[in-house]
Length: 193
Image 1 (cartoon, rainbow, N blue to C red):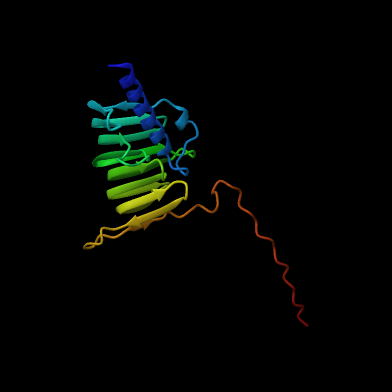
Image 2: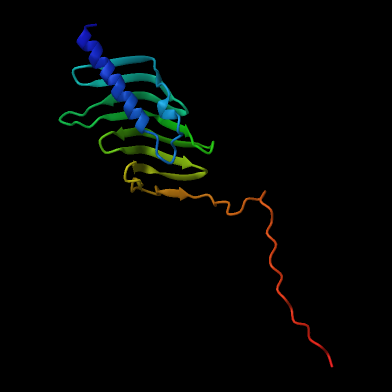
């Protein structure tokens, strides 16, 4: 492989690495994950230098700290006539998980998980599910803009398909905390004649 091709391949791998680093949603980000090495395990890899694209065929497993992505195929590329970088993981389903700072696991799954670096938008398409701290959003398509912190969930609009959101109740009082004693209310005594 020529020196130029090695530089292009290294640039593509660095592009893929930076895209994967940005996949972690702020609410899901574990502090040390983005400083860990990125490891991609696949059955095969094809680098199309001319079209600035890397295709990993699978099963594909990506690990960076507590971030885990599993897919049948992973593509990292720059669309034609664009400066935007994209990552698309496909599978039945493709899955994403990351340990939260509180030790819980946040997960996402869909037939396709797409990330656009320029718009910082994560799009889950086809049987999309997003789970965090026991709460869940499901739909045909879930789009999350990381910078704007905006989430849009949509159904396919056919049949009984609907967006479903399940929110778990929060614990408002820690059961191990000492019980607070209510203040006593003074009662006036009546004197009988």
